[in-house]
Amino acid sequence: MSALIALLLSGWLYQQPVPENCPEISQTYAEGTSWDFVLTDDKGAVYKTYQYKVEEVSNENERLVYAIKYTTLNKKGKEEDKGYRNIIAAADQYLVNIETMLVNYNSDKANYMSLSCNPQPGDDVPDVRKVTTYTVDNLGQKSYVSNKVNLTDIEYGERTTITTALGELDCIMLTYKVSFDLQDFTYTDWIDSSFRTVKREILDKKGKLAFTGMITTYSN
Image (cartoon, rainbow, N blue to C red; front, side, top):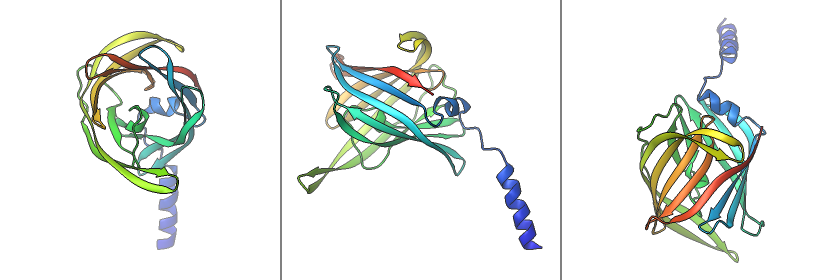
């Protein structure tokens, strides 16, 4: 009898719907979705191109995990780096791997910024303060580099409409200060209603424009 009850219970659990965690994200980052994000320097020249593709979506302990394969191309179009980075949706928040956001940032362990599924102008976002470590392989000799990375003063700003390669998009702005590897920057992201970061501006500590990033292609 106990075996029958267990079987019926497992069947009931299997039929339960997957919890809706940021439902718009499940459409934006459906399996097979791909997009390019191009970063240009202060002179408008291409600095890096980031190519992304969602390879798998899985439900893990009431969280939806979007496994995203990335390839980074340098200014000459040659492959510089590749691997996987995740977006995680849980309840009313989604977590973005900060390695997809910070220029030249490396870490052997994923670190995340927690963002709202229903952002409102003026809303604060929790700080991210980490000591990061990454491994450098130089001719077979491994060395470990550690540094601090801080993302602070994170806040949603006004809503605005911007023009992109995908057309005119209604976005909410997200600003934050970044300190890592003895460098300081101020970031502004434009996030559209589909939770895509479609534009990014990065200012150096003197307030001068250092980089601009734009989404250039998107397909799902």
